[in-house]
Image (cartoon, rainbow, N blue to C red; front, side):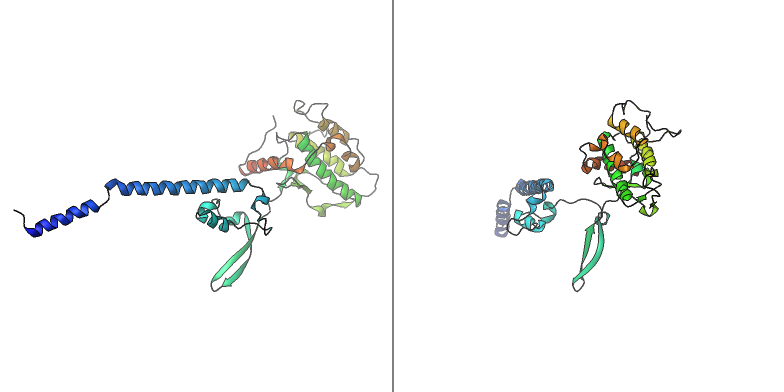
Length: 281
């Protein structure tokens, strides 16, 4: 026989059990919320990847003519900022340089920084690279000759030009370094040492080395056939009397653009960091 307090207690327990949600209900709800969150994050990441491929004009507000702030876009999209903005691992100071700090309040400082300029590489790092073709050869030699032509117009010559003092930028710009080495060209009619040096530089770019006997030419005639513009240019160096004369040769009239050197410089930088050295076949 059950007493009245026991019956009341049993009824309360039964009522609580009836009101308690089904054991699977909470997990189903949590799983549904998790699925929605994951879907929202995936959508945000996909949008971030797509924005990275947009042109700059796409990020400009047509009303103000200024770039849209990513945080404002994140709020408008309804997702968290770290889900909306594409991020990458690593220290920001590998790509940016601190300029100064700005104090905005007590203990609140903002660091102002600018993106680091990519460094120049020495042309010797790409000498003999298997990806150098006639177009890329013209890209390098054409810019070197432009620099030498400028020096000649000032009555100067470099005198000790090699692949080691010619620099190439990741954007494709080629520059002659150490201009303090320049000296006055004694007579306008004299054949500058720079033209002789250009023959060695051209051979090193084409096959990675110059001939030991001082002759001008290449050994790999399969890669550089006799009738090619590169071979004709190389042979004409021996008879050229001025830098301006070399600029007029067909090799340097190819439709070259500096952008065509970007991939070559990037690859050479990677090989240099991994201690890779191209061995001519």
